[in-house]
Amino acid sequence: MAFGARDVLAATVTGSFAGHWLANSLVLAATPPGGSSVLGVLNVVFAVFAVLMATVMGPRRAVWLVLVAAVPRFVLSGAHETSGPAGSAPSRPGRRPRSSRSARPTR
Image (cartoon, rainbow, N blue to C red; front, top):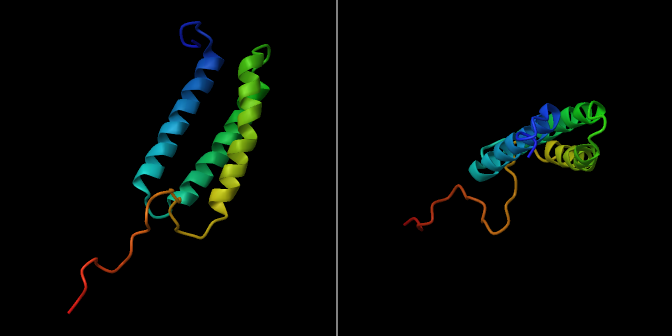
């Protein structure tokens, strides 16, 4: 909608949210070592970006409200992810953690 209306600021915000969600889902899907801290830094940086975008929104109250509602979520999520144990992958419900031992018993 923002792209069709040629609203540059709203298009930037929606495109940034889409890119953030894509990066977030790729890190969660891959569960690399240290992925939790990467997500924490990503969320904090995106929160700073959202605050900067909210300051220049002006009369676009709908987009401003979305940003104001999203900033606390990204700050809290970033603080949680960066304060976890170092090198831990984000937890996903329904998955067992991988063990270092093989599934077959040794003889």
